[in-house]
Image (tube, rainbow, N blue to C red; front, side, top):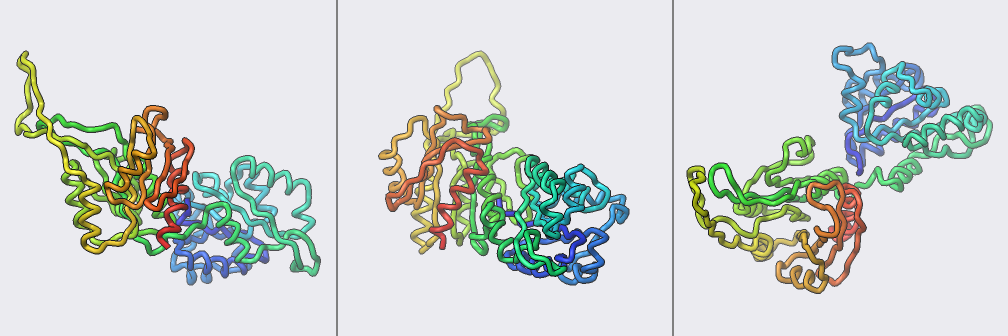
Length: 399
């Protein structure tokens, strides 16, 4: 996932001045940056410079604003920590698990991806102690970029030079942490399962947790999109607390259709919600009580929400891509292609809910079909990973 809220950690190396240019270029990518310099790094670039660039207060010490637990709050909010430059001393302290300044304490608290961009004299970089520390950090999941080779500040030449800004950006892009292919795009995602009320306490529903739709919403937002998540009966703890994602709650299929119809413009609509095909013909205003007799429930078919909406949307001249999702107990691609055409959508993702655990699961897999006849098959994998791969395909179509 492409992070939008990023901590830029700066340690005490001469290359710290180059981090100002890196900050600007990251800011150009739409990142929300918070700079956390070590106190010694301020000998190279002062706090006033970082505050002017970021427009934010800069903290460097664990003893600033102690009551807030700054390192915990910083780590909780960040979606990536990028430390550039990372000195040999700071790398050593991280390897030891030390937390004796604000930056190292934040790293030790973080659950987000951590990337180090080392910069030091080539003999320090090649020293067995440094190399052992780097390997230890990599074994813990921290990403360490290889330093560049070239002239160093004392006139020597070797491996240890701070990479050029474009090289750092390319590296972050290659490892999937700097995708910004949806900047400015408007995406709508439906997620969860609709409920059709029988009486005030009972309903007809389904097993959808909304996790796939939520993963899509998060991934689209992380790549720069403006996202609206239409959430059908999703547990509150799963709803993303993200100001880039506007959340609208709905209950029934009719509620969902009404909300969709109010959206006049989008670049991509992901219909990942599981919509009830039937609803009770009549809804009791009072709870139905057991009296020893049999109870018959008459059901009527709900309108084809996707097909109806897509036809109306196209009729209004809408050009956005519509991506439907279909959970099937038997996957027949020819039949699925027929469904794609009938519903008038641009893509259909189809999966088999009998051969793999999908509902309320962390993983999913299936086949994406397009109206142009193309298809892509995705093995069973975490839903957030799958979302990234689906958006890799779809972002090309969005232009």
